[in-house]
Length: 418
Image (cartoon, rainbow, N blue to C red; front, side):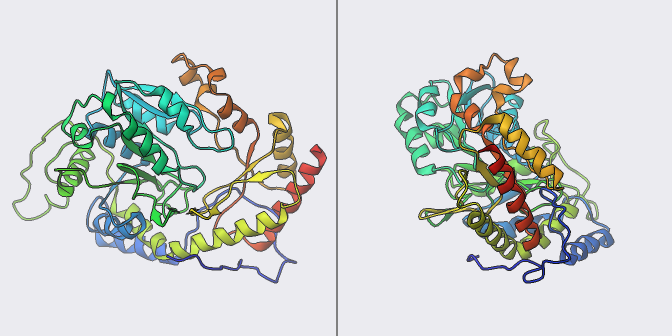
């Protein structure tokens, strides 16, 4: 899992490459096709042996911890909150600068969504803002890893520990922690490392996404991993996720498939967010190539960084002395040019058949959160970051010619704004 140099598919041959550049198509190969075909031909396509194999294969990428494969990262976050006994009357803090899933999971369990602002020069939660939001009703914080770059979990855990005297546990899991829980939205950060530790080895619960646009995809899907809880068996935690993701049923379809094995019980009215063997087979194929896929992303990032070095813009730093990301997104700060200029840059790129994106529209600007009484003016850093952010195409099958075309078109578009 060491970083490698990966040359583009067309290195040294740029004359015939089309300039059309999509934003983030999946990187699929015959490996995935073969594994999925094997599952389809096996007659067993729902949760079964391949899902268990995928969970085991994920462990080296998350710090060696047990994993539960689920239907999405959103489901993973919701079930983690439910495991912690969080519900109506409780508060959960998350970032104003995130996709709605981070907050939706809080709403799903009936807790109150509390938004915190980000740091002025970062896309990550402001520690001061988080500390100001914590009350005796606070039961969890959902930090968000952005673009593959991890949150400073050391500092965030410090905030949680510093407020432990006001923490009021209301479940066995909360008593085991003795402080506000950290439930990481790591949808972007599978395989990222901070201080030599993988994403998945920091928070109490860490939730990953395998959506179609993620570095590693199962089409749709997600997973949750966790650090050991005092006086709690990993097997018991895993069993909870399996029960909760399949109606609270004591046997999944595979366990019920044996002779005279139909009998089962429903321990509680659970949910339906299990991963299938079809998805897991796709994920296994991706994991077999994941190291080289991430290496290619880093090669592209280096090319972008070199090409844009003389522009008055600030790309997201994927490699620093204390962390190496998985290279998920190439986010660029336009340094105060603002939303109007960004819109013109996106239009200029589109004229060159280059797709760009924006990560993220802050929650206070969205109808659902405005209806909750959230005021955008309370989150100035999130709004400023949004108005100046643009995300350039970055995917592991991207050719050198495509990288050069994006860098050239982006440079021209920025120079027009100067």
